[in-house]
Structures are given as C-alpha cells and as structure tokens.
Length: 329
Length: 139
Image (cartoon, rainbow over all chains, first blue to last red; front, side, top):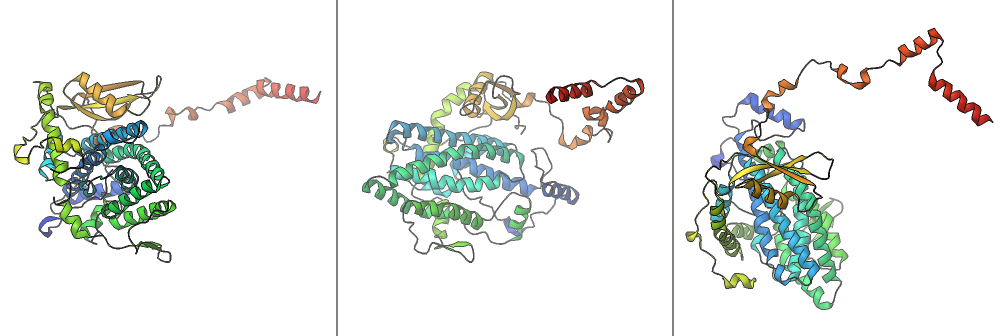
C-alpha cells in the first residue's frame, strides 16, 4: 500500500534536461510514446532514473513501515480467522516491499543503501503510517480505505513506462484485492454490529479521514517538471485526479453503511463532476512527513531494532565469495 | 516511548546514534527466480531474491513467489550467471524481411492435388464421403 508519488523539485531551478544527448533523448521519448517499456540497461535521462529510484524506494519503504501499525494488532485480533487474515496481509506487505526494493535496485541503488536511508530519514515513506492504529477498528479502516487509495495509485502506476516497476505492481495489485475485501469485511462487520461496535468504527473513520485525504499528496503545482514526468510516464496522474477517483469510488460505499464522513463540505458537484471538500491541512502533512508526527520515532525505532536484532544472522550467513550483481529485470 | 503496542513499551528501542548502518553485501547477492505453476507448464521468470547461498535462495523464493500461488517447482540462479543479449543489439534479431517460408500457412498444395485428381480421374476422398452421407440421410 502506498500513496502519493512525491516528486522532488529540481534543485537550483536548473533545466532537468541539461547535459542530455538530444538524439538519445528523442529515441527514448519515441519509445515511451509508442507504449514500449524501458528496461534496466536501456539509456535513460538522469532525471528519469533519479525520480524513479525515489518513487520506487519510497513505495518499498511504505510497504515495510505500513506493516507496523497493522502488525501491532496481530496479537490482539478478535478471533482466529481475523488473526490469520491479518497475518497474511502483513506478510504480503513485507513481500511487496521485497518486490519493490528489487525493482529500485535495477536502477543502480543497492538495497543496503536504501535500508540505511530509510533509517536515517533520508528517504521518506507514506505519511499515513506516522499515525497510530488506536483500536481494532483502525486496522479495519486502514485495510479498507488506505489500501483502496493505494490500489488506485498502483493501478495507475502499473501503466507507467519502467518495466521492472510495472511488473512488480501487477503482482502487488493482484494481492491487494484480498486486502481490500478483508478490510471491507471487517468494517462492515463493525458497522452492522452492536451500537458500541458502530461507535468504534465511526471513531476510527473520524481519526483516519485526515490521513486518507492526505494520502494522495498535495495538489501538484503545474510546472514544466511535472509535465515532463507525466510525458515520461513516471507520474501517471495528478495527485488531485487520484484523490477524485478515490472519493468517487469509496465515499458512496462509506455512506452505504450509514457512517458519517467528518467533513460537512464533502459532496459531489454533479455539474462539474467533481468532489468538493475541505482542503486538508497541508502544513500538518509537511510537518509529519518531516518527522514530527505521532509515530515517526516509534516506526523508525522498531525498524532499527529489527535490523539490529537480525545483524548476527546476516553476518553468520556471509560467505567470502559473495559478489553482488544488479538484478536483470 | 508511549506506544499503543504494549510490546514496544516493554523494549528499549535503539537510538539513531546506536545504529550501525548496513555495509555492502550484508544483503548478500541476487538470484533470479523461475516459477512453474503446475507440472507440464514452462518455468517463468517472476523476480529476484537476495540470498547468501543456493539453499537460502530457494527458501526465500518459496516465501516470496510460492506463498500464495499454486506452485509445482521453483528454480533459482545467480543473477551474475545469467548471460543476456543486449537490448542495444536488437538488430541481431532482424533477418530477411520475408520469412513466410517459416510459416505452416505458406505451404498450400491442395490446388495442385485437385488439378491432378481431375486430370487423372481420381475421385476425391472427402467428396466421396460427403455423397455417401447425403445418400444415407435421404433413406
């Protein structure tokens, strides 16, 4: 599960195509226009490589960190079947992380570097996982609505131009469909249950609505940079378009259950065909993504602990004749 | 730390300063994974795993690619042992533009057979059978 492709602004306002071979660039763009995929050893512009590494790496980190708020609830899942379901989901998320790290590696950044950059905070992960899953109902809302947002993003990205990322996403999307159904089932069970259960799921929705609205990222500023990344099929839709698509598909399903979305402004403007809503607090979004959220320290602390505790296993398994090579595809 | 997870409250999470970064090769090396769904199918390349040796590579491949899907068999091979062609050498796959001589549909000889049969009074087998069937159905 993953949300917004955080596109880094080009530094110093430099032309991002500076120094690129115009002939090779034209060939590259023609290939993308024809709908062909780019493979790891193909020529690509430096900016294409840089943005893809950032994007795929963030996506991988989000899978690994995203497993934590839900993983917390495995020991306390209500009932054996739900525990099995949650364990399978968390295991899938870690598996998705593995697939994505592999895809990012084909662009030349090693897995060790990526894991280190996660821990030092140099690379980011999806902002929503810096919020806690306070009750069981929070895990239900995460599994349903956060995964739904992620699927919208991932389905769009799977039509992108970089072969290894698309292949990883195809596999991931197939597995996410179980997460979505599992989450929906849990929400429906609570929403159609006792008054206490309904209250619990309503409160979870109240807590998670803001992160959900943050999920696809702040509105993209129209810029030449964004335009180029969309032409290269690195970015497949604007953040606002993805958010609209999410609202279109899921708001009615939330309303079906008689749950109240905590935004009095939220409604669809039928003439414009667009959802109108209270703009989420983007200052808070920035603050949380830069480390000041309720769970940032805990998430990275747990990740460090996992890595430290695994160190002796890693070292015991080291062999003198190991030789790293970049994966082929 | 005050966490909603009681287990986290019980442990001391290491601070960033206490953390030793991973060094190169601590994630070992890469293996390409091939998956066969059922006996009789082809093995298909599905992705990679990182592993320190062949046995561990198979174990990780089973977790990553055989966890959900029906699986009859897995292969792993070190990425560095695979010998690929280069996409830049795409022209090596270009031969003569006209290659219909390689297609089954380009070999068509019924016209010649029919002509020969007519010239030599040989009744076509299929035609004969069709007429017999017609007769039988009239009865």
